[in-house]
Image (cartoon, rainbow, N blue to C red):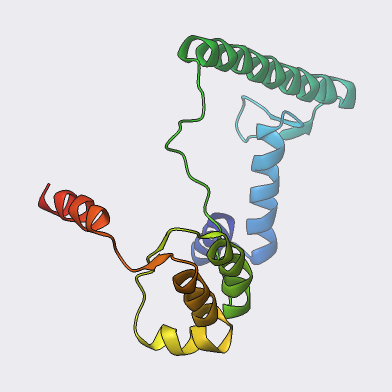
Length: 165
């Protein structure tokens, strides 16, 4: 339920009809936009503002907001130049893989390009899935070409040192 719907519901609960509650919201909106002006006397009388005046007021509001946005843009550009924002070498790009087909399409070129060592940490059942798509064959090709499948002692040392930190 939107806030307008909730407000309308509460006005109805206060005794207004649905049309009266909607009229109240419309009138409030028109006052906020400068299209209707309430009188200062009692009872309050609502009068439509001259169209040229109302549209001029709306245009001035838009122009003021546009000037403020331009000023914020300039400030951000100045801050950006001062900070000299640059993409970090540590920034990575991630790809969301939604299916096994996509996974294989992404993984096979990488697997085929491996020449020295290959280490993939995955649940055991994935080796069965991998065999269906030629991944195990690519692993065997790497091994037969002198490549290593599994962690090297250097990798194990680095991994252990990271875990100890």
